[in-house]
Length: 139
Image (cartoon, rainbow, N blue to C red; front, top):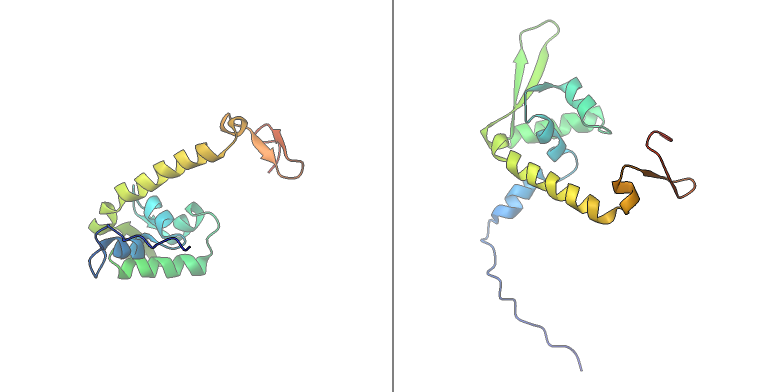
């Protein structure tokens, strides 16, 4: 006998869901990282590229354009030779900071829950041999 389908008692979100809209802005690869690194001070392209490890210049450029179009960051061309461009958070971008910080905090807690006790004490596992080693023992 099949199990009957239960009725959902949660009120459905409005047609234009605010959660979906917020995730459109901060979702995807690299956007939260870019917002995070702009939290203190404006940064130039090369500085952001160095800050966000693993991002290519092409992807960083695309994400900066997307964030600018969404109104999260502003782009300021400085009158220098050669021209210098700085990116900074807009008011909307600053409003996203507590959200990003909360996600980072939860991420730290999740990492602590999923790592063995010895790793939490500052030791890493060597992937080649599966044993714990002291920090700095391998790259």
